[in-house]
Image (cartoon, rainbow, N blue to C red; front, side):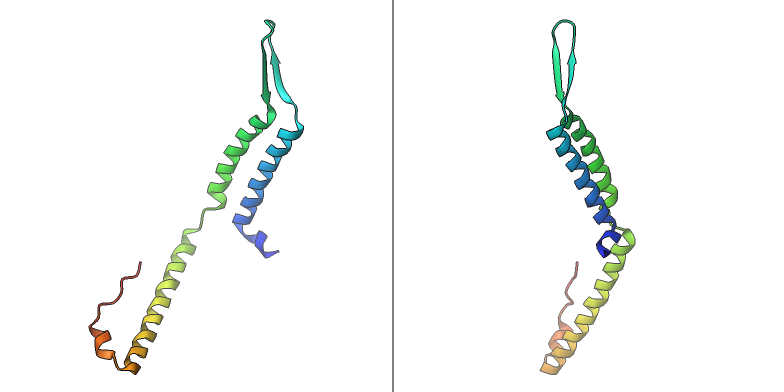
Length: 113
C-alpha cells in the first residue's frame, strides 16, 4: 500500500497503538496498590501511569512524524509562483482579445501572498 510509504501514516499508527495500549491497560490491568504498616493504603490505576508514558510518546512521535520537509515546502512555493505567472499571462491574453489591453496594462499587478 502506497500510504504506508509516508512518514505521517506510520506516526498515526504509532500514536493510535500507544493509546490502544492505554485503553487495554485501563480496562484489563489491576491497580498498583501500596499498603503501609499503619493501615495506609494507596491505590493507583496502572492506566494512568501508562497514559503518562503514552502522552510523552505521542508528543515525540507527533513532532518528528508530522513535521514537513523544508525542501518540499519551498518546492511547492516555487511551483505555485510558476502557476500564478502562467495564469497572469493567460488573463492578459484574454483581456487583449476583449479589447481591454490598455486598461489592464495600467492596472497595478495583484499582490500574492
